[in-house]
Image 1 (cartoon, each protein chain N blue to C red):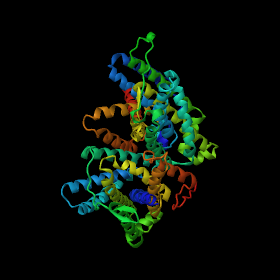
Image 2: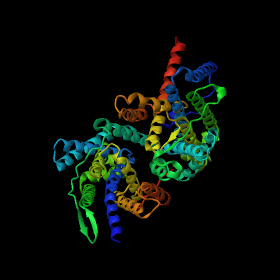
Image 3: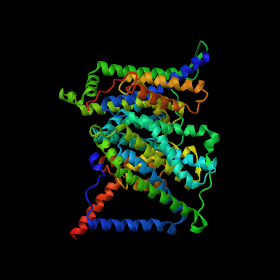
Image 4: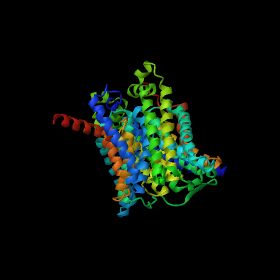
Length: 293
Length: 333
């Protein structure tokens, strides 16, 4: 039993990371209807920036704050420069542009920082909290705490600030929002900036566990997609729940299903994506889009 | 964008232009047949690989360019063809000519099966599922070690040139691939001119209108997926012939993304897009790699974005525009 609980805890730890990247995906989807295939790469790039700061001797938490600021500005810039020209274009065009961004950012990181693996400092103390035969590593607790904090801040932003209200208005109807005087263009850019910031948090959380290299987020991205699909692409809370479920499902099937083992675990997100799309395409918490043909 | 990508008939070609086009094509064919006798074996090998990519891109073009659907996992079908061929030759001891139709048929069948969920998904969900399939394939290939050779892969003997031909190995492989590419081009051409092609264009340009006109959406989307998989599988088979070695790490998700990038840059929905894309995928990385290991990625990424903004028909569209204005200047002068 303790072994099982241990696996669940590990799964939740992994799931919290997937949840944070899924949250970034969902934020952009809600505002712009775009699924950003480059989200993971943007997070990876932000993590390199954090590495550069710590490498220059900036204390970790200050480096994190600086990185998040850079990520926010970078996200807004990308929206204005790269995404704005294809706004309203067919889905095919938009997906291809974000795939292009994926390749570009990945290669740019490799060019600037080389493809060699870098050590990333772990902000959380070593060791684990023991309770009832189950050990919870402090880093796992830290990751979950950070994701919960991000979630809480987003909730406060959306529910209790004027900016958040404006963003929700843009998400539900850009034309009507523009009519009541909201600057839609800036709000969309703000959405990308926020998503890039949330993504940067997930990158910084992943880096100590996976080692920092340009392809670091490639593996995480597909889990985040599964999490967002499971939770519903338009539901931030769904993304977090989905992330945790995907993390636990991955860990448990790796541990208890012999034919899956540790090597075929990456089949779990595929199975989840397919299952959700065939049974409940809008996800657990999402709303089905009603289209007028 | 959709209307500019159209490749429908543009009315009868004037006789003069038809004659010019015929001359040009004949000259190109002669040059293509003469090339392996003029170049060093390594260049011949590179051209052979261009043709292999071209066949895969013809398939991808059918799905993305003509069908308007997205696949981020076409490398998986390529891998199915490559591994299918390797397994047939390695374990079954089949003679190599048989493996081409067999690999194409297997890829077609798998494409048809995967096309069932594909017909229920659209746009980004299809992109997601195909991406997940491409990622899942590598560990799957490593797992069934007794069949696939695991991470070590399988090494095979390359097809030997028959004695009567008097060709070297690289030249024989080049002509085999060239013949297959021409066949693929012909199949693709007749597909597009048939009912299937017209249905695909209708679905791409306006799904609702197409359905109202009586086009069976689900059926045609699934068939597009299957046909496109078939071309990728055939390309995979050619790849195994040419390289003589398959390993899981040759078929990572990077291959799928590179294929899509090549097609977009070559020209979505354009007749010559796959060939230009194949040239691009083969030569740009090897030329730019000397600058920096990451240079090909930077070029690919930047070009994809730029092409989507300013030239949705890619290099093929640019070439066509250049040819048009050149022709106009000739006539004026």
